[in-house]
Length: 169
Image (cartoon, rainbow, N blue to C red):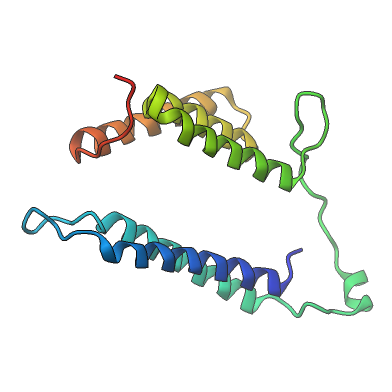
């Protein structure tokens, strides 16, 4: 169980990220097309969403019980068993820190490979890897969701909005 302080720390870090994104967009140029959103619109929308999530996390931390319940309350509490551990190919359990490290590595690989191979080639692999880390095991989902999301990004952002994404072609 996460402590109240841990919840506040997570909320503060997320709010700090939202604030940093918002402050970074101050230097973005204004819209070049009248009545159209400028380049700061989507990052600010992301910052707003992160700020709302930080508020929700902070509210949950506030409503959580006191950190020091004492031995009587701790022994009376029933703790449900944790779900199955994510294992690597050798059957060794990978903890939360290992999953975070793999996720960060996958995202770093995406950032490095997208300009060389192309966003629309690397994005489905990244999404499938992250889904496996989150516990998804159905082959239909591991193939369908990344392909549909990549098609969505291609059609909406690349074609419709004209966002320049790294492509190999």
